[in-house]
Length: 499
Image (cartoon, rainbow, N blue to C red; front, side, top):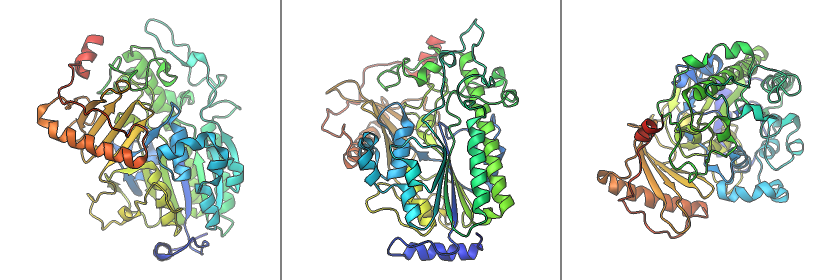
């Protein structure tokens, strides 16, 4: 189905004024949602990572708008993806979404995202990872190769490589469990499914919502040998915030025994981190090629002129930063994700630094299609920021906060970020304070600097307010954190001692 950019914008404007959920008129855009798994925000060449090759995502960035401050609100257990995807598909914030994981009846009664698209007159399609406590085969018109939370794995993929010993794992070995299970890499299968669906959709006039969810680059991080060869481990630089171990990792809910953290030995070694980052880059480049195949199909079928493409990930990943391997920690690499939109009406080559939640994409795409999200959704559309005449520094959210279990909370306001870590029942939470403009790698904690005491107190008060609004179980009266904290080692000095 095809329409001009003028037709699309006219339909979009009419949709904004529509008082109720309308049926899809002619000219409404198709929606292609590409969702990856465990992809940190800093894993795209065009957005600043000079060490990785992502030519197809780079082209998407060039013809669209990238949001550089997109966050997942957090998680209620180690599988952060469950919380992320449940929030996205229900429109509920973290603590209201949490009960739905175990309550099938409640989640089925929620305003699920694919159901809204279907009610709005869209054909709906899923391929790949779902990981939401609802039956996708009843929610989508069609669902192919519905995948679990992660591919199968084995013990050989953990606690490796160890210095002085051969690495027992070969990420290109197709006989190992993981993404090769079934005989073909899961990322290629997901792309095949999407391509077949797009080709069939090109022959109809009905708009579609295609939810294409890759398991990559989640571990076990496997890719064909030619992709591994692009990234010799000894050529991969260590991240600037590399640490052999993070002081207080257990308090953050990320002990060395956590599944994600067991992927590499503790303390971390340069060899181990370079190896894992090499494999991470390789599977992302392989994933990028699969995305390229899908985007090429849009062009070949003529669908590109009327298809909005959104690329995002469910959560980030550390892969050796701050001493962590997983995504259960409060640092930017683990809570921030890539987000790119491209297609008709989307400004080309634009970058927005406004604070957004990943789940704000839900009402945004609905709005761009002339539909409305369900009343009471916790998230809000950032569609106004897709107007190129809107000043580049226009905010979407002035404050944004994230959380993980009872272990930590964060608040982002402008360039400032507060992290509070629980220290035990009825004890004050321990603060960290960073200026992300001056310290993007979060190496220098300013919480104990008297010059920032007033700002620290202001951010703590703002976070408590946000927690109360969100129904956070920790939003209860607590002793105020004194600005003079017990002496603790700075990260850089700790790294020197442990190296």
